Length: 362
Image (tube, rainbow, N blue to C red; front, side, top):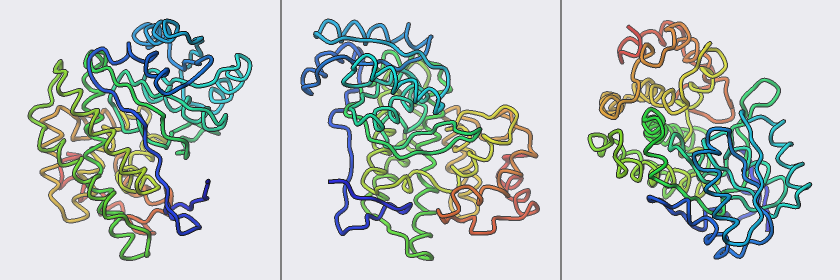
């Protein structure tokens, strides 16, 4: 039964539904079990693997071999960017090859293309990340470039998530640190959600909020243990990212993990000549927005710094003027999602005061 939902995640009927991955496998060598996992899920036919040129060599070929050993057909679509054009290419190729399911193998781009294409095709898809840089690896939302803008789209959650930590730990450490920033941003997202519930009567789930906040706290409290080259670090971050995705599924929206700090990041994506990683920008945004909330922004800053994620504009490689512009324009992103920034945003003077007080700009 399908029910339509509004931006708040409240269904037009009294029922509420959630989508969760049926299986989450995280550990060394997990990728080699994809064929057996597909058999256990009773999938049939051919699988279309959406991946990049580099990630094909790192993981895609292993996935194809595992599928073929289990009796499946396996084909590739190589992509560079998460665009609607590539989504349409994936759809067309899946139809041409008569594929029965899709697999997103790589970073967020490949997974998001597989996510949207499989939803439009009414097929299952498997998420096989090669890096743990954001919570999109298990969520039901995707970021796609369309008409020159990056838009967040609702999709289906993956049937399964296979996170091979022996591959993830070999990816650049800054990607893992960015994943921590994305999880830590749940702090201000939940505060924004609570504020919207009080002031705008927006639906609020105590359970989803508690899970989202607990996930952020686990990463902050484990900051000193998250280090380059440690497989345990990769496992911890993957679990946190999946838990964050589950919180969104329970809520029926991205509200538990996306608030004013994500709006800030989205503006930077548009205006900065060379934006930083999504999780890096969200982490810095969390410092700024926690200050506005009157919360413990120093704790956020110190945890990110301990992990090795950027905490200043300089460390992100973004000029101060773009930080200030993003702070003053962030309220315009998804205006239906009420946050600490309100309907009118903050002034340039206020933005500069916050950014200097937190050390984000000098």
